[in-house]
Image (cartoon, rainbow, N blue to C red; front, side, top):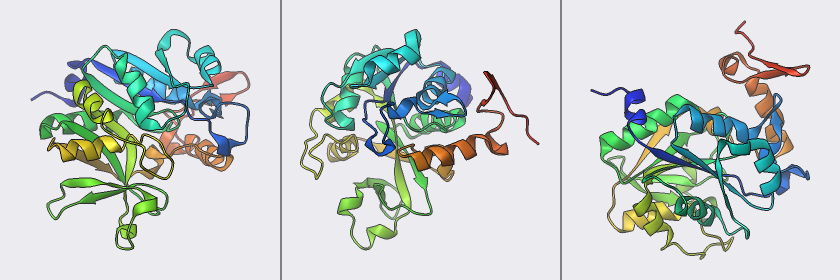
Length: 270
């Protein structure tokens, strides 16, 4: 039976990294994904994850922040431009349309602590379930603000309900959408072409892919994890401070480099 590592290395994957957001809550001229955690730009954590799982190609979706991000990333990835911010669904489509492979992994550029092992588990879960689309979820203490995962009595995924639309009963659900998706290019594009902007933000939501695939009786599954730190998004200066503390903790000390003077080193566990 193939190991997780063998399974991933046998597949050519195009990894799409969403990084076109303005990051208004950072209150900074610096693009959100270029703010640093222990001396390293947030986006580099995600690029390195894509490299570590041996992605055949990496495509970063950029917006008005294109020049700054390209300067930091260089030739480590391809780039697709979302000139008008129209949501994560539209951004994903920009990248998928220029991808070379039929296996698509979608990551968020502002989520630095997602681990390689988690992605490998997601990919193998997808294969084992013979799924058309697999996405990552997380059990959290406070789900407010996140899309809730709706399942039936057999734990099958029924959909994702956004915070603005949850019922009183659904507010109690603590399994949330982590914004990581894996599936076939043709199926994801087909679903993206069917989603609309009939929501409060007037944007194309990537979560619409789940709804469309379920509507068309495709097999959609979700892998649930429990480590909230892995799916933590950096949206504010407060988040950045929290992330700095996480990066310096013993748990992550062998993974994330910490800056000392002008050099980067790995802290050894105490």
